[in-house]
Length: 193
Image (cartoon, rainbow, N blue to C red; front, side):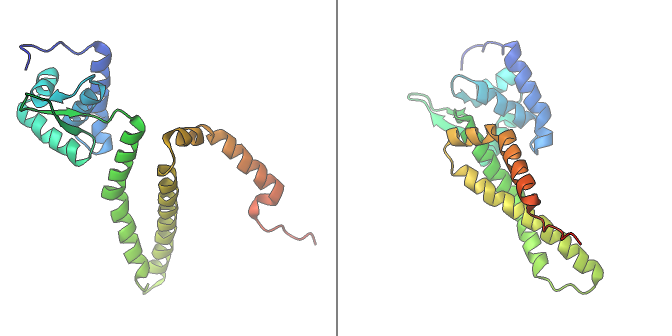
């Protein structure tokens, strides 16, 4: 490790601090958020000692944070020739980072919810309150299921195509609005009497 690493530039420090603050909103702790931001911005792979020094974190906190980032598949382990230390880097493609994050959140949060909803929908309701609750759960299940199918379709797109699709958001909305006006919104037209 170098005797002393350079201090982070103000812009980098601002980004790292923001990711730390956002971490709790995203389900990770502040330290892990800051570590990821530092690794993401780094021009080269960093080892745990460098991360600890740059962020003024304890080495044990860095080790635990790196394990968490690896479990999320957000950092990759590298070894450099002639150096026994482990180095960590973030994928360079931001679209790949988004995909990994989305897949992990799906696996950790959405799939268990869908599983619970599927089980609840298989139950035989015993009263009106349960029938009502089950219908609400069916609506939630159907929406989440449809979103996941759409997300699977988007994930299969090339990054350039997905970016084009996202850029078309307002255009697609206008086209669908025009279609609804032309077709009556898909609703049955009431007969004039």
